Amino acid sequence: MSPQDFDFVAQLLKQRSGLTIGPDKAYLLESRLNPVARKHGFAGLNELIQALRLRGDQSLTKDVVEAMTTNESFFFRDTKPFDQFRRLVLPHLLEKRAAKRSFRIWSAACSSGQEAYSLAMILKEFDSKLTGWRVEMVGTDLSTEILDKAKEGLYSQFEVQRGLPVQLLVKYFTQEGDRWRISPEIKRMVTFRTFNLLDDPTPLGQFDVVFLRNVLIYFDQPTKAKVLERVAKLMAPDGFLYLGGAETVLGISDKFQVLPAERGIYGLAASAQPQRAAASA
Ligand SMILES: C[S@@+](CC[C@H](N)C(=O)[O-])C[C@H]1O[C@@H](n2cnc3c(N)ncnc32)[C@H](O)[C@@H]1O
Image (cartoon, rainbow, N blue to C red; front, top):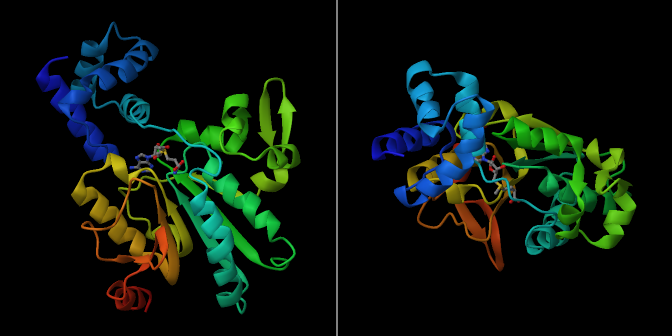
């Protein structure tokens, strides 16, 4: 691939998904885009890039952008965030939302759904305390293909072996051939929809908990800052933000502060609170 073609595709990806890709990743572009070229009937990558340049074909662009996303996810990823959710976040919400008996959770960049379904399984542990409550969980991702998998809730043996305790596998999944289907009771707790984190999330409404894990790593600093700023605007004033293990707000956004003694979870910084109040006034 010529340097000009590489720059063109890298620029397109940055604009459409926020993905920042350096020339050292040219091999990744080639390995991920060759199947897209075949699918669309092109002789090779050069022809695909020519078509992107000349035609501005939306379906081709979408396939290129989706092919470049990394959809790695697994149940109860990194364990600790989910322990914190059970130990700290849910008790807080049960107390603070007792009057309105409702709260909302956003699994932003949810990939194939394991994050949202892990949270749903934890919520099930609190079933008796949540009787009569309205708990809404929204999973969003840029990729419609990966969202279709999330909506289907059908996982390979390998996927259910990564992070999912065997008791939960037995309790909430049924085997179909060599795959495992999540139960309807867990599935109906989550609504999946397409959403690009580069867009304005205001229409999604306010959230009490946001899981924004393992996606900022693909963005450059200004994009991370912009996404975090927008997320801050739709968080409840006492809401919780989760980032991935390799991600931080430090040096990127002053809208959040790490919760004392709870690495990995953030609350709105005092400076962001008046803005939130003003935004909702
Ligand atoms: C590595 S997965 C993380 C999944 C899950 N949050 C986790 O931690 O296991 C990253 C996901 O981010 C999605 N993604 C990448 N860029 C995005 C964007 N601009 N808007 C929404 N989702 C995006 C990808 O499609 C992919 O499914």
